Image 1 (cartoon, rainbow, N blue to C red):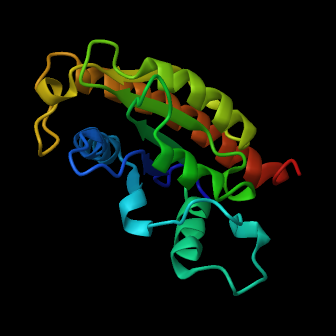
Image 2 (cartoon, rainbow, N blue to C red):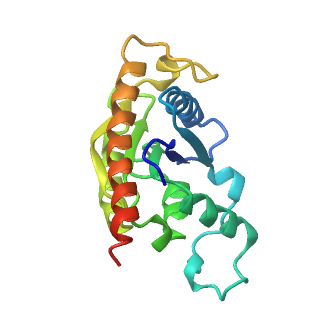
Length: 197
């Protein structure tokens, strides 16, 4: 695959609550991904309705996994990188996001990841981000050093994903450019020598 081809970034949304705010941030990031010449894809736990984890995708006999799980596995495999968009619940990761992540393992391997968090308050979900770094590392996804925390998301981003701040679009572009650098490096390495294991 040519390095000039667009990268595909999977946005893994982290909440299924009826009043969730993360869709605003996912929409803003999706637009910025396109503006930077890449392709966004969305993994919304509402769309896949995974059960609470009983068996991982790899634990099903070939051809017997639930269709939603197969669709999500295919979506993950097509991604060059992952942007996790997470709320912070009780200083931690939302259950729906952890469940979505935990259903898969090898499918996540060697995909650089970036963590975007949000909250209604002033800290922007950074405590969930620290937990996500540990979880994503265990799933074989190196995370970029930058975080994108968005405090007071209801004021920062309109319902349609429009930036209401003077800083967020620039910060998002820098964040996504860093992810693209790592994703491009991983793509070249995979093309040159294949997966490490």
